[in-house]
Length: 262
Length: 278
Image (cartoon, rainbow over all chains, first blue to last red; front, side, top):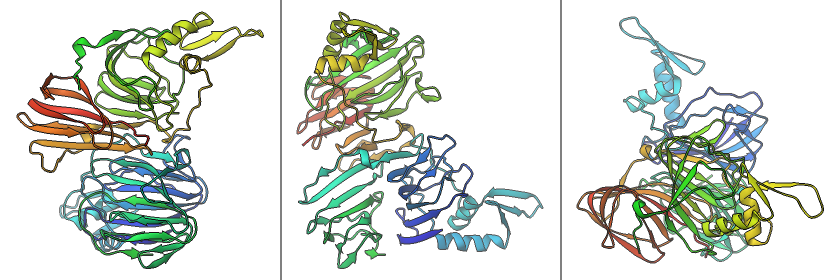
């Protein structure tokens, strides 16, 4: 089950969707890859992303699942994941769920979906099978889907608790910078604010509040709030109570739309 | 700034704390005892080289130049790939004949620095008066009796530093393997004939790994504004601050300084921005 928090601009190379994903004990996917990036922060519980017993993303860790890198999903037990899906460095962008649904509806008139596979018969009477997401993407984009070559061998999982909080130039604000990846520099980490501390928001930032209260832009936030700057400059976040949040800087592709608070 | 070349690099075999089957050509060294000390080396291994499963209190970046490097029973790093082994990560190493790796060993974000090769080799030699190294493990007989064993590097580090080694918990769960050929070059603004691709920036101290391509005839002022840079030419020819470079020449740009690059032949540079601790 997905709870959609924020979304970017359809068709933009840095388009994204930020969601909370609830996974229960029997959810699995085959091994697959995407032509977009994912960042996964395990809010509660854990989930398996590969065949080995070591490939389990634990609670509190944050993972970068780059475009073109294969993985699978295997629910270990009930889990809640903060999931960013967004355009990767290749510039292939990210297809919104509405586009996915529209493509599904259009393709259903010409064939059928079953078990994650789309099957259709061409004019010569030949039957074709294709991965369902790939078929919809190609329908909506009007061109073949080309997966980027994997830049990284595997998903990158970081244990935030093993990083030091380091001071920033902003009084009362500390950061755990996890990393920035690939040539478009998708970046993520954590911020911690003391009461009354103010953070100047990055125009590329998405924020998800793990704890605390305060104001971002002109709107109040609390645990579970999310905000996207979408290119706006000059916005700030001020804590009323001790605050900890996840930040994600989307890849650098240029301008985008107005600020949203979910 | 001095340009170092493979042809006149200092050559050494294995230190006493590890097995034979490994050779080192040291290109660049940092400053012993500093928080951001480092060493840039070309490492050649043979089939017989192996280490026990171990971890470090410093970091490693490995660019496999030739052959492959095995870092676990099912884990191979292929030619042309770059790996980042963060401090605290367990691995084993198994050599393969003729494998060559450009290896940067450097201080990690925990701030424990990096023990120099001079300290390592002297420490290992002196420790042999107390016990012996075999297959990468140091064993000795304590005064109160019995027999003790310890990873060879760990034993030397504790001997040299006079305190127990403290390992950081690994920030990244597994070594990060990157394939530079899959990253795209992007133009560097305001620099004609110069492109770069960032592979990544890691941890809270900002270790940065990137590649830069300078076309034949192009010039570029490479600035170390935010962090010191360790630079190795992977191909090409030209000049760095007036000194000639070729493939596998290396130089260091200290923080706040710059290197004037002029490529005679198209050049690809491998660049690592060292962590900062201020």
